[in-house]
Length: 475
Image 1: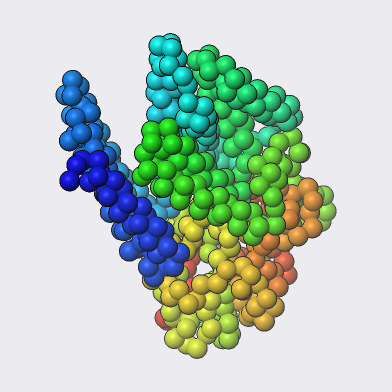
Image 2 (image 1 turned 90 degrees about the vertical axis):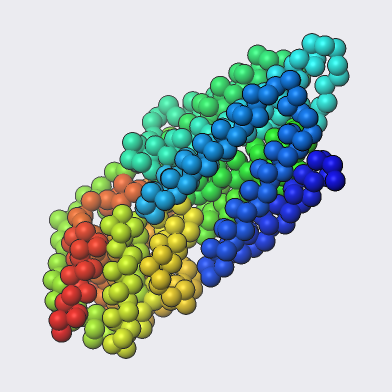
């Protein structure tokens, strides 16, 4: 069997494993196996590429290249394994953004090299394949957008610029850069020259920074999903340039699934992707809007002790837990599951309400709860659970802010206006576990804290829920 046939068979095997793995990822019980299958598929693809270039004699005259490839595989594998083992689940959004950026950056670099090959062929008088040239340009632009946008998202998620950043000049700057991006794409396609291409990469950098900087709050998971789809599309385009079927298939799968997920999340938030990306640009929606920013009578809150809360929770029929990023930061998912088990053992109906954009990346909260072995049957998304809040005795909000903020329903000046929320304010009793009254990720106050039905249970989520668990055990 020739190296080409062997490698193509391995690519086909990889594609099948990618598809099966993606299918398995759609269900929590099979997600772990799906991840494993997709990883095996990627190993097949890497091995196939190596077989093709090594046995095919493509390294003849360049013996050092094979060594560099092996070093790169070992280095990347080691760094990836260490990161996967050491990065906490709460830091997964940052890691995903960084890895996603690496994928986009790799696609942009490969496209740049391919572009140089096109220029060399043109200089030698050879005809330029318009389809391959277009794919190279597309891979370079989208890969660059994904790389720089992901780096900005990584910085925001890491706390360097956590809030949405807006300025009066951003609308003008964004319009100008968008026009420049379109112009350089047209010129690059027509000129087949190096200068417009490198100008295009530079404009892509500016566009991605201007696109992601104004985004904050509940829009961040949508942007991460969108950048992930960009990386997939860039990889697929690079596959066309290199005539590499594994890249085409894997990139198409990532790009298509990321695009569908982005659209579904926008639908869940009752917003369009254009609104998510550009609504904050010069729109005047700032962190000062919301309940705290309006004049009016002084607001008061009520606190509750662990003992009183234990008495309340164990003498009701139903409790809906709303986990948020505060629970993730405190690593409180395990003690939260222990609380749920205690209440369930006492006959309380316990459910978990997971908002579509809870956490800071798609599926973040589901993964955390699965890590704590919370029964999947107790997890409900927004559409399934919202009608139950009116009949619920206690809504227990643990570290969630924006996803339960009633201002999203009526305050048109709020950055989260129009986003569907979990109707925690409709429960008979509302318990908010939080360190302080400080705003959440969107930077706006939350009037639910001042609701007459609300009790504030201040403290780090892990310690606070731990105290509640001990109080219940002491009854």
